[in-house]
Image (cartoon, rainbow over all chains, first blue to last red; front, side):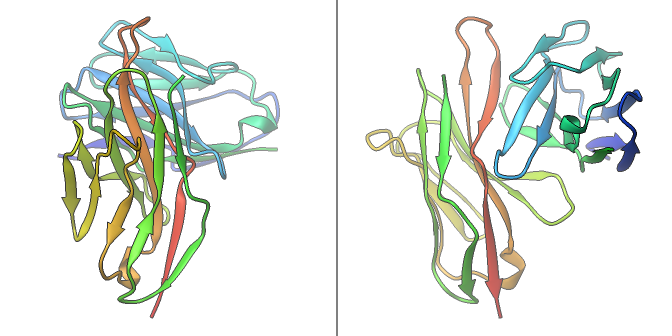
Length: 111
Length: 116
């Protein structure tokens, strides 16, 4: 099992460009999450999906959109990137045990 | 809302020293508590968890006890190694009664540096 995979690992964008971060899990989990990690602030929830076909906003959703493509895949889209979105982005998945399994992260820089 | 407070880092210790990283929380209801570890350049990994009061989570020599009376979940290890150098996150999982969602709330993380 690969667990949770994310692509790309690194990305540099210019202000105003768009991009999609991809996430997939092979553990048959219902719930999936997108977080951003900033220095001194821990992880903050951007969006989550409790099950296939549903998505909901988290703590910091502004400037992002998500798509739960199927049970395995949950993508995060930046329509018009801003320097404030420079961060490390983590995808996670979980099942009823409440333990979340994390991907390796995407380091995004917006110039 | 729910919150988690961790001690500021970095914590710098010599190998074989005793480690304590403090964590306190605020939550309504009965949360589950977790410690996650993040090694350089990697994602977060679950280190240990406790789901009810007085439970002790343990893994790889690390321990933490769920103390409801003090709303704490301090991480301890009797003898740290250089390989324990990482960032440690305390987190809670509670049911949001408004949304029916259960999600993690993280502390800000504590960086541990162990010197040989």
